[in-house]
Length: 115
Image 1 (cartoon, helix red, strand yellow):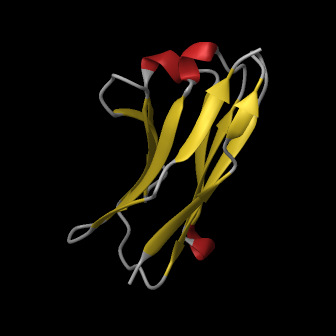
Image 2: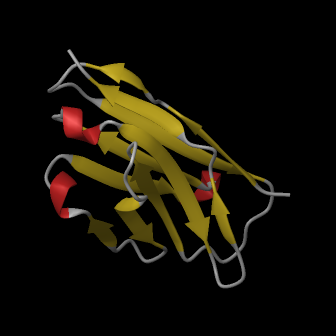
C-alpha cells in the first residue's frame, strides 16, 4: 500500500522560507504528475504547484516567482521550496501523486506565516 509522508511545515515569519518534502513509500509505477495543494480555513483546496513526469510545471498565480516545485524520481519524492512567504500562504499543504489508475494524497502539513 502506498503512503505519502510529508515533512517541512511549521511556523515562519513573513519573508521567510520553508521547504516541504513528500516521499512515497511502496511501489509506484508510471507516475504522471506530482504536486502540492493547500487549504486555508474556510476556503476550498487549491493547486499550488505541480510537475509532470516530463518536467513541465504549473503554478498558482499567487505563488509564481516565490515557490519552486521539483521532484526526485529515484526516490519518488516531490519538493516545494517556498520563499518570501506571506501571511496569505498560511494553510494546510497536501502533496499529491497521480498516475493513470491511481491518485494518492498526503495527510497534510501545516504552514503558518506570522510575526
